[in-house]
Length: 380
Ligand SMILES: Nc1nc2c(ncn2[C@@H]2O[C@H](COP(=O)(O)OP(=O)(O)OP(=O)(O)O)[C@@H](O)[C@H]2O)c(=O)[nH]1
Ligand SMILES: [Zn+2]
Picture 1 (spheres, rainbow, N blue to C red):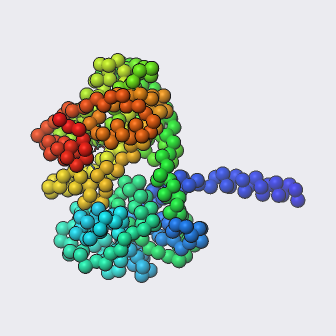
Picture 2 (cartoon, rainbow, N blue to C red):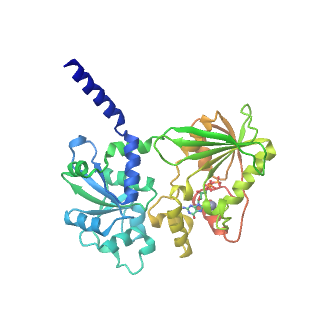
Picture 3 (spheres, protein in one colour):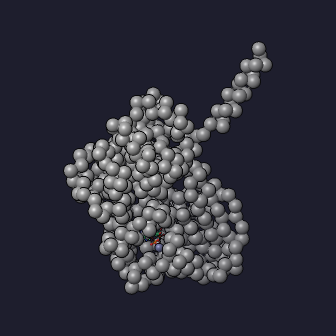
C-alpha cells in the first residue's frame, strides 16, 4: 500500500514538472499560429471553465479551416484599429475591431487583412463592426509576436476547451497572455567567444537567449571595454537589407559600420545587435511595408496599413542586456530619443547621446525625413 502511493506521488510530481509552463505554452501558441493551427483563448475573469474562443491567424488560414469556422455561425474577423482605418472603416481609435465573418469568402478575408491583396476588393464600408475587447487584444498580441500579419479569425465555442483537449490544441487564458506580454523574459547568456574583426583585433561576441524561447540577441564587445568609465554603446536593431545587402533605402548599414569604427577608435565599446528586424515586425512584414512604399506610402503609413504601430520594438531588451554585462553608465550612439528615454527609465545612466548621422543617400532622404517628422528622430 505504502509503496504504491509513493510511486503515484513520484509519477504525479514528475508529470507536473514535465507540463509546459505559462511562457512555454505561449511560445507553443506562437508556433501553432504560424502553422495555421488554432489556439484556444479563454476570456478574462471567468476561470478555467469559461467558454473559449478558437483563434486562428488570417495569414496561413486554410480554406478548409475557414469553411469549418463559418459553419459554427459566430466566426469573426479581428483587425487592428490601424488596419480598419486604412480600409476606410470608422475605427474611432479602437485598438482592435471585430467584423462578422458571415458571408466573407476566404479571398475576402485575406484581402481585408493584407493591403497587398486589396486590389479589386469591394468597399468594406458596409461591414458592421464592433470594438474588440481583451480576448481580441490578446489574440492580436500573439500573432504580432509570431511576426504574422496582425489579423485573426475568431470562433467562439461553448466547448472550446473540450475541443482543445480532444484535438491537442494549446489553451491559454487572456490573463496569461497579458501577464506574459507585460513581462520581459530573462535573457540568459548562452555562449561567448573572442572574435577578431576588421575594426579591432580584440573583440568578443556574447549570445543571449530569452527563457521564453523567443529571438536570441547578441552583444559584441569591440576593443577592450572598461566598465569604470561610461561605455560607448550602440543599440542596433537588425536590418538584413541594410546591414547585409547594403540597401540604400535606409541608413542602418553605414550606422553599424560607423558605430563599430568609433568604438575601435575610442579603445572599446559595446554593440548590442538586437534581432528586431523591421522595427519588430519581422523581415516578411518589412518587405510588405517596402512593397507598400513602392506604391507611395511612407515608412510609418506602410506600417499602419499593415495594421502595426509605427514601432513594435521592445526597447527593454537593450537595458536588460547592458545590466547583465555589468554596464551602468553609457555614451549612447543614436538619433532616437526613445532609446535614451528607455535606458534612463530602466536604471541606466545615459551620460551623453552621441549623434550617429551617416549614410544619407538620394534613396533614403524621404525615409530619414519621415523619421525626423513623425518618429522624433534628431537629425540635423
Ligand atoms: N517597418 C519598417 N522597418 C524599417 C524600415 N526601414 C528600416 N527599418 C528597420 O528599422 C530599424 C532601424 O533600427 P535602428 O537604426 O537601430 O533604430 P532607429 O530607431 O533608426 O534609431 P537610431 O539608428 O539609433 O537613431 C531596423 O530594425 C530596420 O530593419 C521600414 O521602412 N519599415
Ligand atoms: Zn535599415
